[in-house]
Amino acid sequence: MGNKNKTISFRVGEEAFEDLRDIAEERDLSLSALFRDYVESFVDHDGQVRIVPEEEFGPGDAGDADEFPPTVEVPKSFVREHERLELEAKHLREQLEEHKQYITALREQMEASESVDGVVNLEDLDDVVRLEDLDHEDDDAPSFQLK
Image (tube, rainbow, N blue to C red):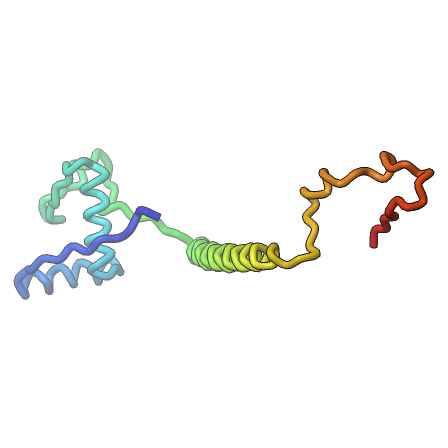
């Protein structure tokens, strides 16, 4: 849970902002996603990322005629399944928290009821004399019955 998102903000000119928005629209991304992708790429490559305009990037630079930037098609069913699993995980976390609260409440009730007379804990029964150890000839011996 130590992995929390942080916000980075900076200012750009209006023209640069419009250009960034156009790039994001071309790639069907939000501006936030565009910057997240860039920052993740920057961190993954230890700061060795260089932005190259498409006009300067030729097909021979990549070794093949691969498109730039490379794209991957992800089926919608995969995305839906991923979202479903995220929701299920969230639901399970919520259930786990509810169970923890329930167990805490039961423990508090048990601790409160320990002060009530007449409650015998199973751990305390080890100190009680077993029935076989009693002298059966003695009629004054107490009799025990489990209910």
